[in-house]
View 1 (cartoon, rainbow, N blue to C red):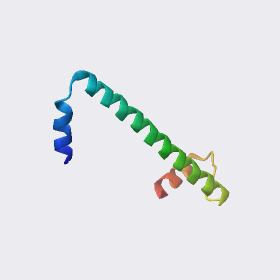
View 2: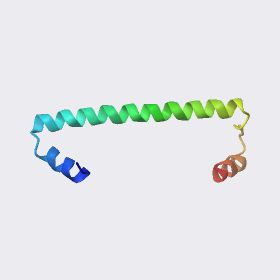
View 3: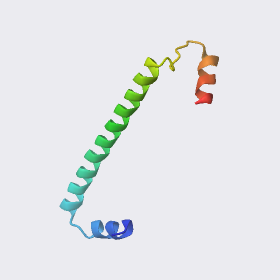
Length: 69
């Protein structure tokens, strides 16, 4: 089934079914975002342990770091 077919199938659902599907999708998106945040956290902890994270209060140094990323 293609994405277009799926969208058409959803359009034929009743209001209650569409609302339930919306809730399911929203919960799934929240879960995926949490997983992404957690993976980013683990990566940052690893980089911190490897000494790759540099802290600075110098705005020029921070801008340089951001542009190199």
